[in-house]
Amino acid sequence: MRKQFLFIFLALIVANTSEAQTRSTRIGYIDMEYILENVSDYKEAKSQLDLKATKWKQEIETKKLEINKLKENLKTEKALLTKELIEERETEIKFLENEMLEYQQKQFGVDGNLMHQKAALAKPIQDQVFTAVQDIAEAKNYDFIFDKSSDLTMLFSAKRFDISDQVIRILNRTEKRQQLNKKQLKEQEAKENLENEIDENPAMADRQKALDARKAAREKLVADRKLEQEAKRKEYEDKRNAIAAEKAAKKNGTVSETAKPAEATKTETTAPTIVTPATEPAVNKAEERQKLYEQRKKELEEKKKKILEEREAAKKAKEAETEKSNTTNN
Image (tube, rainbow, N blue to C red; front, side, top):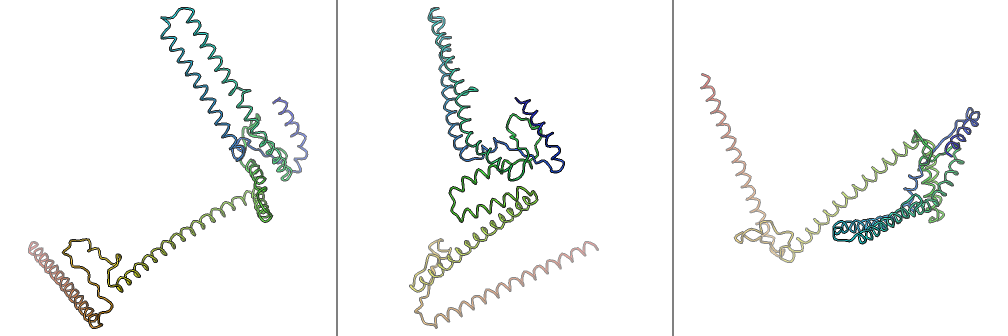
């Protein structure tokens, strides 16, 4: 059968040689296994079938354990049993082994339940794939389209001839169209036309990838800026609430929680913070401001005096070191 297929394939190529001289032959291929693994309906059904296969394997393992246990018991008790009892137990073990092998063949054999259910599961999707392949071949003037996962041996296949992703898009489009309204259908058609143009033009595909990358980068930048703005807004609101609470506390003659200094957690000997009520005379406030001004002035003078003393000490130390160095040299 395979030789006949290859002979027919070669005959078709020879028959199209004259036509190929005026028009380049278009060849493509699909990977049926790859397509099936990327169709949601097939993946869901296959997961259910995998659960069944796992259950069958567990049943087979249970039968194996029972048979091994019977063999061990027979081996241990063999010296105590009569010839008839030994033969009876061996016959029982043989029967159970045959039963287990038959069950294994029934579920996992070449003509077993697993293969039948896989074929039944894949057939509807395969029919849709064949229809999609025919539509692509007619629309884009393909001369030959092969299945990479079939019995036909492909020693080499360039990725640019792989139309599997196009087939998957057609299958997904059919599923989406059933859930779209008129406006969404128009948007979907425009998107499909763009995808078709990209498939026909590799350079356009590269440009589209670059555009998608830039779009993703812009979206990330916008998201980061939004997060930064939210953080700044929250910080501003927290500060505003703290100021409002402090004002309310001063108005009521109490200290707010946010206005308490860190020193409040120290020993009880620390002097408490005195908040001047808003009802005190303006004269007292002026006196307090004057005292604060004088205190700051005094602190600055002391700091300046200390700096001058440090500079003078450093200068003297440097002069002493220079004099010592000169004395040593002499």
